[in-house]
Structures are given as structure tokens and as C-alpha cells.
Image 1 (cartoon, rainbow, N blue to C red):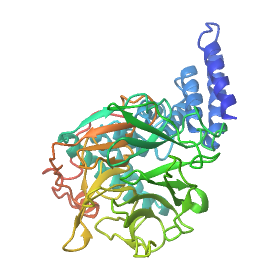
Image 2: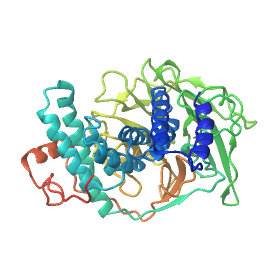
Image 3: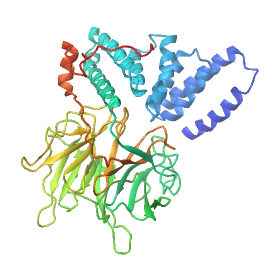
Image 4: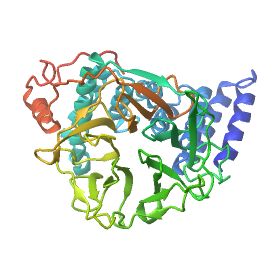
Length: 474
């Protein structure tokens, strides 16, 4: 149905906005029709198509506050969240009571646009409304908004002190106009596999429930220092459902995959002498009825790090490790503990070839917004992973930053990210981190930051949390 709407959108926009005979009354009526169609599609979770319909409704009648608001909401659910700002601003100016949460949406839009002072002011105004509410669910949201304020303060510090890295967009041999993400490489950096949702060479011609093509695993090889055009990794690894690669062993002979069956499981496939891959098999020792969604094998093949939301953890998805015994069986998983795991989510785990560093994404440590990438160092004396450091800006951003792999000496990293220079939604990038300097930020934990907000203690760069100036009015 979404494809039919997309064709109708193209036709309607050509007819409507090239015809000088449309009256103001016609435009108002047409705007309402587009709005109604957008709401129908939005309820089916086809957010990108819905956003196009809402934007057409705005074009037909810019004074349609409902359409302005829903254009902002639907765009906020896509990868270019910062583009929602203009629509939320217009909706608020047309009708400040358009939605009970309009201040929160505006705060988010400023946050994703990296206008942090304005975001803080709007989050704070929204929190004051929540504090006066007798609704229990709304009062519970205060902690969520406090975290957003915390992230804005962190982001201001990080953007002001960027780390010395060079980020390069990989060529169109790898990236496409479709989502390309979760790159993983062998230690010699000669073979890469990644997940894509492009239609070319896709084994499933249908669209998934989110109106995107199904995930497929593609590969590329480096020849004379350049990555050759990526191809579908045909055979048993790709089928007519979602197929996602999550890790390649340093020697390139074992691949871990994620399948969304049984809640979400991790499977393993091995490279055969003829260059093909074995049928993926479940790693029964670590899979449960709960979600297991990312994993990484150590270079010696004896440790398997993975993430899971099984009971007994500290929050959403936690990082666990399983050690292989003398008989080649994976042992009982052990949670890495509170120094690494938080009350929220850890994901995209990767252990370095040296085994000394663990890289992962989290939205529970001190970050800029959504998921940020962190690095934890192993302490052999205490036999534990230390409190992680944020990899810093511009490696991290205000949006989701997840899936990072590194070369053998950890001088270079590959990530997938949404950035202005990209050609699609998510693209694959290479980062030069060879200068060896550690990002240093004086950031409090979230709990301390909340106390600072309440007590006006100077924990953020000598300025009390809440002392901000507004960059612009909504």
C-alpha cells in the first residue's frame, strides 16, 4: 500500500503545485486530504511515506498546524531528525497547544540540530509542566527529560573539544542510496562484510513491514588498496528474510550473524576451503528466548562477548562474556558488571584484536544523545573491564552511533553513521584515530547531574546545570 501512496504522491505533487487554477479553498481542502492520508499511513508505521504526505499537506496550506506538527513527528522517526525543527516551530507558532508534548518535541528537534542551549530551555519548560501534572505517567517522564538535559550539557562540552580524528566517507563501491551499516573486517583489512537494505541483488523482492527492503549481507575485497564494488554474499548466509552480519573473526574464517527468530539469536558460519560459507548454526550455549543481538569473538577464539536483555542484568541489553572450555564448548555467560553495563542499553560490542579494549555503544553512560560509542580497557590485576570513556565528537553525534570495528593496531576504525556527506541513510565511514590522544571530558554521572539540576551545583564546565542562554525562540 505504501508503494501505491508513493506513486500517488508524485503524481499529486506535479498536478497540484504546477496548476495555477487552484483556489485557496481548494488548497485548504487538499491539505486536509493529504493530512488524512498521512495519518492512515502513519498508523501503519510507514513513517517516511507519511512524512511526504504531511509535507504535501503543508505545501498546500502552510497554516495547517496539524500537518506541520505531524510532518515534524514523522520526520523525527526517520534518520534526518534535525529536519523536523522547521515543522515543529511552525506548528507551535500556529497553535502553542497543538499537542501536550509540543515543548518536548521542540526540545528534541533543537537537540538533534545541535542547538543545545535552546533544547535545554525547552526541556526545562516541559519539565516544569510535568512537575505540575497530576498524571502519574507524565510525572514519571521527568527523569527521561532530565537525561536529555544531561545529554545536551555533555554535547556542548564535546563539540567544544573535538577529538583529533579524520573521517572519510567510503566510496560508492560500498555505500548506496539505501541503508548500509554494521561493517566488520578481518584483521588484515582486506575483506569486509556489511548489512544493506538495497534492492539490487536482494533475494527478497518484497518490502519488510517497515516499508524498507529486507536486510542482506554484502561483501567487498580490497584490491590494490581499493575496495572493489560490493556484492551479495550469496549462498546459505542470505535467504528470503532479514540477514545481518555482526562480526568477522580476525582471521576472517568465522562470521557471526543475527537472526530475528526466537526473539533474536546469534548464529555462526565458517569459511570452507572452497571459499563458501557453512550453513549458519545457533550458538546454543548463549541464545535464550530473550534478545541476543550483537557479538564479537576474541582473536584467540576463546572469548565471546555478546549483548542480551535476559533477566538478571542491570538494564535493557547488557554485555556478557562466555569463555570456551578445553572441549571447545562455550561456558555459562557472565555479566561484565556495573562498570560497563547501565540501567539502559549497551549494544554493538566489539573486542579489539589485542584483547585489551572493548568497544560498544550505550545510551546509559555520559553521551551526546541516543547511542554513543565507548571504549573500556581491561584491567588484568582486577580481572575486570574499567569504566568506559566516550570516544568523543565527531566520532559520536547527537543521533545513534553504533557498530564500530578496528584494524589490528587500532589506528583506524570503520563505523556506520548518518552524516551530511552521506549518499544514503546510513553509510560506512573510515576513521583515522592514529594520533593516540585520549578524549578527556570532566563529566559527572547522570545521578550526580540530576542532583546538580536540583541544587544548581557547578558540575558542567563551571556553570550550574540550568544556567543557559537561549539561541533562538521556538
